[in-house]
Amino acid sequence: MSDKQLTDINYSLLDLSPILEGSSATESFQHTVDLAQHAENLGYTRYWMAEHHNMPFIGSSATSVLIGHVASHTNHIRVGSGGIMLPNHAPLVIAEQFGTLESLHPGRIDLGLGRAPGTDQRTMQALRRNNMSGGDDFPQQLNELRAYFEPADSPHAAPIRAIPGQGLDVPIWLLGSSGFSAQLAGQLGLPFAFASHFSPNNTIPALDLYHRSFVPSEVLDEPYAMVGLNVVAAETDEEANWLGSTLKKQFLNLIRNTEEPLQPPIENIDELMTEREKIALDQQLSSSIFGSKETVREQLQVFLDETQVDEMMITAQIYDHNARLKSFELVSDLFNP
Image 1 (tube, rainbow, N blue to C red):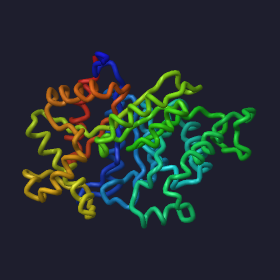
Image 2: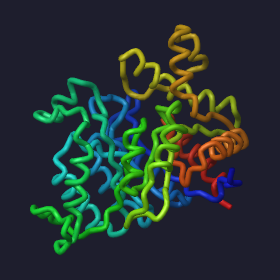
Image 3: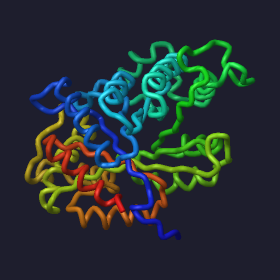
Image 4: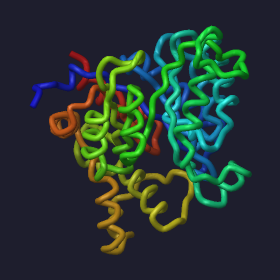
C-alpha cells in the first residue's frame, strides 16, 4: 500500500448548477460562474459539469453551452464535462461542439463521456429518437468520436471532417458507475473517472478492473483514475450534517421518484424516512463525507488509502451559495501543501 497523501493528488470540482427552490436557472448560472472563479482561485485542477435531463434540481442540461460560459469567465482552470452522455448525441455533433470549445479556449477543455442516458426512460426516448440501444453501441460511438479528432493525414481519421475538431487535442475521459466503462477505459489506455458520489459500492471493483485492464496508449503510459465524491464541509460537524440534509433530501426524492428543486436544509431528515428508505439512502451515500475540516481530512485520507486514486472530484449540493463556497474552500485547504 502506497503512503499517498491528499497533498500528493489533484483535486477538482463537479458542479450540477443546482436550481434552488424559489430561484431560477438564471441565478443558478450566476452561482456557477462565481463558484468556478472561486475554484480557480483555490487551485482546483478542473471544473466539470454534467448532462442530466428532466431533473428540476439540475440546470446543466445544455452542458456544452455552460462549459463555454464558464470557460469564458475563468482564465486557466480546465473546464469540461462530467459527463456528456454520448448515446444521447451524434458523435459528429459532440466533436464539433468540443472542437469549438477547444478552439475558443485552447488547452483548457476536457471531454468526459458517459454511456447512461442521464435521465428517465421517457426523456431518453425524447432525446435519442431513433437510437434506443441503451448504450450498447457506446464503444462504436466512442471510436467514431475519436476519429473526428484525428489529424487529416491519420489512417484513423474519419471520412467526414469535424470542423472545428479535426486535429485538435481534446482529452477524452470515460466515466462510469460500474465495470463497463472501467474496463473499456483500461483497454483503450484512457483516463477513467468513477461516480462514487452516487454508486459507492462499485468503487473498488471498478477501479481494480480499470487497473487490471489497462494497456498503455498514446494518451497514457500508466493508469490515471479519478473519483467523484460528495463532500460537505463546515466549521463544525453539526453544521455540515445540517447543510448535508439538502443532499440527503435530493436523494430521498430520487428514491421516491418525487423530484423537486433543491431544498433548504432541515433539522432531522431521519423523521421523514421509513426504515427501508434510510437503508437505501445510507447505502447510496456511503462514500459521502459531512463534517468539519478535520473530520473531512480524516475521511478523505481513509478513502485515498483504500482507493489510491490520482485525483478526487468534489461535488456538493448545498442550498446556501455562500455555505457552498465555504465548503469548497475548506476542502481545498486539505489538498494544498
